[in-house]
Image (cartoon, rainbow, N blue to C red; front, side, top):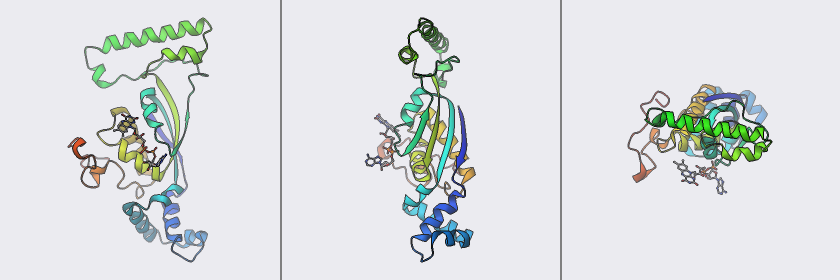
Length: 225
Ligand SMILES: Cc1cc2nc3c(=O)[nH]c(=O)nc-3n(C[C@H](O)[C@H](O)[C@H](O)COP(=O)(O)OP(=O)(O)OC[C@H]3O[C@@H](n4cnc5c(N)ncnc54)[C@H](O)[C@@H]3O)c2cc1C
């Protein structure tokens, strides 16, 4: 899996903090942006994040390039509606390099070889159909959930906090959890205050999953400590 935060709102933390401050000040936002004391602004940001008044976090956007993930992952990802996505088309792009994801529980099992050979068979049948001039948009019906895909994702900070809460949780499927953790790691580098407490509910308090809880809080892991 390759994940890279390629672009984000300049000064994302100050942008959101000043928006929050502006709502209760007489000054125009531009004055506040220039004059705001950094520490005060960060305190406001912390309060906003903790209190759940998250609309001001929509002013900061983050764009990620993601590749080498499965279609099974992106099918789950695009259920998150407050985001923008651009995914490589299986209609227009004939897959030459037919990469695929093998879950660790399969690669370390007695099914590893059979799995690879099934995928190889599918890939060569896909190629055979393309060679016979079956359109890529039809030949792709044979491709598996495991097939590699790439996608550009843009989310604002409010949606990212929600995404990390659901998808960095141990209850999330392992591949999307890996993506979420990596996106969070890079967001923390870009905007450490904004994403200070980001992640599954168990790093901020009791697990919100109730009887579905995995019972293994993630708060001791380096990403969250
Ligand atoms: C562990 C796990 C298991 C899952 N299992 C399944 C499954 O078995 N089957 C399945 O179909 N899905 C499943 N999902 C997907 C899940 O149901 C959601 O579709 C997905 O997580 C997107 O989250 P969301 O709807 O909260 O938020 P987003 O789409 O990311 O939107 C963010 C927030 O905006 C608000 N919002 C967005 N759209 C609306 C709207 N139309 N009306 C009102 N408020 C809105 C809500 O507050 C929402 O929480 C699973 C998700 C997880 C994390």
